[in-house]
Image (cartoon, rainbow, N blue to C red; front, side, top):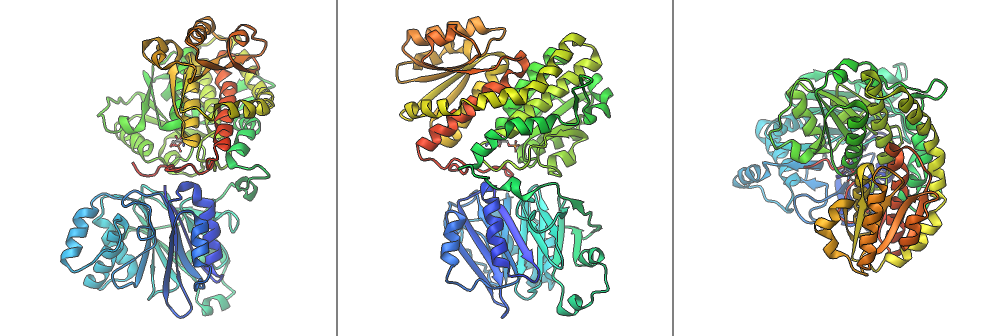
Length: 631
Ligand code: M6R
């Protein structure tokens, strides 16, 4: 969802804020804006509909000076994308400016009360209500900005990460969070604020993750303080940060080291982040396994599992909860955990699970999967499960995000920042992590034979190389893509471990090329979707040489009998499907449970190339945001 950036220090803020917005643009790109306090004490706000580049063009001839500022890139919730609805928003007196990520659910009631007090509103946003409420509180109770923010937030129902500037305090940013992420970066005599660490990484590796219902005040040093060099830098910076709860309980800042490099945030010669991330997969998969699989001893050691073995061994049931692509990874894990660990698994959309009053027992293990670690529904799902006593294990990519912090244990996927809105490398790493977990439980429970365990562990070691071979077929897929840009609809079919892959392939195509696509279990086709088959309908069939291969071949025959056009993903050396399908892509053979790691790659590339040929914005598809921090 929306991206927040802030800076206070001695440098000019504008360049830092704009660069930060570009780094955060994957979170939302409907409109963007910036607020700066200049030397004369003026609080200037500039906003533009569209991408950050539109804002830059608009602000080019304006006064963009100031060593303190906040900036925002928006993903619209309340109010259409427009310049008026873009953040920052002024308060009534224009003394305050606010940026906000999240949703103020009771904004209508708060707005009514403020209107009765004579406040007027320029935008349709819930955010403007909040800044007015802060100002109203400040004036009525005669408080400072921090206290006004605390008191206002006590009245708010909903989720927020906010940053507030007050022109009467041109050296201070007040920020707060609940349910939406917020990170503070500590530089030398300067502070950075952002929704995630990507805008901060090039300036400092010292960060503080703000917790829910915390209010942080960041103050720049005065000239006199800068002159006092005898103070140690660390103590110095800490003394300029104040963290309290919204109820004014004092907190001690906990500084963490960032593990992220700048090169991970660049395209490195690729035309799009998505393509770069697809190509990174052989390496990222190796990274996900590094230190966890000992190839000499053919053994997997997942510390999050080892430290909590009994919780898994005593589990009567495993509930997997996630959204989108992460949910597809969870569905693959269901097949693996039931096959190897023989524990019943339920896979739940977090958004449904959290509201359907699910039965959760103390001996349940809940596995939450999330690339960002900030998805609002998944966060709420684990809060619910935790309150009922379940053990929470999370698979997450972003280190220090809310979901892993709330979990009892877990496993990071370590694929580096995923910037393309369409998830690719995070998905394959989630599948690897979940497969390792299934094997660990199975081995500990002795529900998998030693022979099978060893074979799969060795095969896991081969996956990065095999995936590189799949990537070599990129050109062929780019050619296929040209043929299919006419299509309005696609069907994707797969069975067993590859049924979730079919759904993932369909999701990728929908997201970035805006072509409608459905993923189905192949055998379900006869129960309805077969009516859609005609020569206009491309059908992607994921048909590696697995348990149900012959049955899938029959499905392909059924499609061809109705003149459907088949693109098949098959195991190397497959001659049967090659003779029936219109187009085939071969992937190396591997253990059935690992086939998704190879079969998904051609589907990622196919979606990518179709989107490119159609001229779509691959990395920032319309209406989407990378991290869905509102429900
Ligand atoms: O960060 P998460 O893994 O929790 O995100 C879940 C979904 O929002 C995400 O996978 C979404 O479906 C992607 N855009 C898919 O490419």
